[in-house]
Amino acid sequence: MQFKVHDKIESLNGKKIYFASDFHLGAPDKATSLEREKKIVRWLDQIKDNAHSIYLVGDIFDFWFEYKHAVPKGFIRLLGKIAEIKDTGIPIVFFTGNHDMWMFDYFPSELGIPVYRDPQQLIVGNQKLLIGHGDGLGPGDHMYKFLKRIFESKISQWLFARFHPNFGIGFATRWSHSSRISNTKKEEDKFLGDKEYLWQYCKDVEKQEHHDFYVFGHRHLPLDLEVGESSKYINLGEWVNYCTYGVYDGENYQLLTFES
Image 1 (cartoon, rainbow, N blue to C red):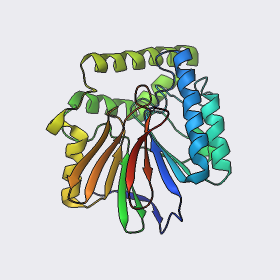
Image 2 (image 1 turned 60 degrees about the horizontal axis):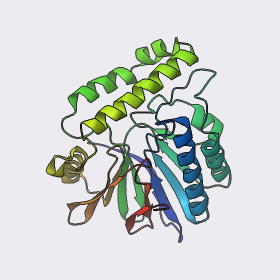
Image 3 (image 1 turned 30 degrees about the vertical axis):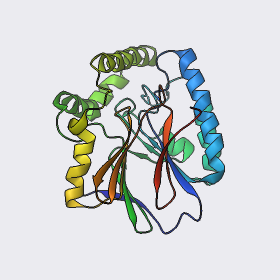
Image 4 (image 1 turned 180 degrees about the vertical axis):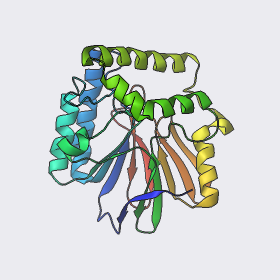
């Protein structure tokens, strides 16, 4: 099991790395999403002066598809804030999730923000972190893994792009909302104990290669669990209910809540 090294950092020089995921902007309605977006902007304003870098770890948008000449309407406050922060020289890194996997070159070309689809290693001093959204990893969930292969195919993306944005974005947004509601009704957002598939994934990876911290989203649960004697699995939670985020200072990792 080989992972690409995203970056190697000798020292954070007193700064911190911040992580957040699963904003799900756009859901469940415009008004609620707007309030959440304003809260996220306040969080970014609070951390920017002390940030070495910021990692946005997937499902930032409840749905996203980039047409050749169009992107989904809205989210201007978030996009403007991360553009402002990036322009000050603070690196921002974006991971796609299962709700916004159809991101292509908009963030890299317009904002200078790299977009990753698979887990990446981050090495800071003598510590190693594995970072990713987490969808499709670990045992089980075979139906989603099958659907993900379809959604990631170039043919599916080409076919969807044939729809007019008014229809394509509208239809996919409704489908995305219904998918999240279905998961909630099935209580998939509750802690599953030893059946937590991302926790199991981390344990399997740890047997082959040591990481000090495994940082994922997707599960919508803030989790801080032991993987080994000197290894932890951190799930970042989400911002619909928890508003949790991760802070790493080069040695220790904390899971905090914004405006609790």
